[in-house]
Image (tube, rainbow, N blue to C red; front, side, top):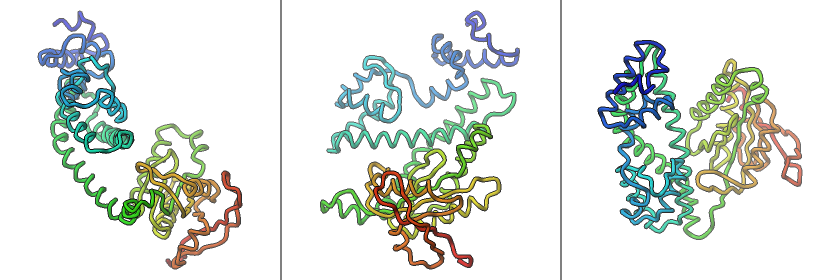
Amino acid sequence: MDWEAEGLLDECPDERARAARRELLDELHGDGVGLDALKEAVAEHRLALLPVERLLGGEPCYTAREIAERTGLELDTLLATRRALGLPVPAANDAALGEEDLEAAKIQAKVAGAGFATEDLQETNRVLGRGIARYVEALRTTITESLLEPEVDERELGRRFTGLAAELVPLNAPWMDYVFRLHLRQMLRNEAVTLQERASGRGDERTAAIAFADLVGFTELGQTVDVAELSDVAGNLQRMAGELVDPPVRLVKVIGDAVMLVAPRPAELVDTAVRLVERAEATDGFPPLRAGVAFGPAANHFGDWFGSTVNLASRLTARARPSSVLVTEEVREALDGDGYAISSAGPKKLKGFAEPVKTYRVRREPDA
């Protein structure tokens, strides 16, 4: 194939790059990749990734309609699940799916036939899709930093990505199974009482301690530093929280410049919030944190938390001073006081709450 005549070497900066691209194009074409697919990959600047894409995705050979018919899964359910997972949704009659998609649909059909509510399953898939997408994005950063070197040509980069994928993919499934099992076990331990209450018909609302911690002056910081540095600051907050959080405290989510934490009881959560604020204060060049902690009724819906207690913790955080932890009277009463200095911060009028809320500042005693 005359790749130059096809215009696929035009953007190569020098003869070395042209030679590498010729070899990569020859290999891919010899492996069955058509000219149109190669042109598309070049136009989208992903030619070096095409070998690993083929390794991971397999050859498309089924339409979504064919997979639905083979598995007994409703076509609408199949497509809705891909959408919930954040995956591309092909037209029903496009041969865009492969053997792995067929096997996955068989699993999906078994799960759908187990009696779970369809919308509950799709919401679970949305959570899974978001989580896996973040995991893959983090993995992308790790891989890019380890594989990209100056002067690496397309052919060599393609080989590196393919070799790494061939090595890591077989390890990923057992690793994720291991992490899933440990998280499931920890959830069952933490939620044993709640699960028993739900089994007895007492509903999904329970008391919980909720905390937010956010970076003071993050918006103003964004006007003076570049996006990469701002991202590093937010990433460091997430790492700090991850290092300090231990069960039964859980990191619920990261929301830009803030983290949300939850625990069954206030004591452990206040301790985590105080240590997080102290860690930020002791870190050179890191903005101060402020935190708010509330305790009361809250509802867990597919891993996220809702209710007035969540809103109260968020409002408290916005009113807290830099490098301080602000708590409600319910939290203060739940603390035994050992190791903490608790002082009144006065009643505060908070958005969304009809009456002023009594608030208190909590800090660690100097000798604690």
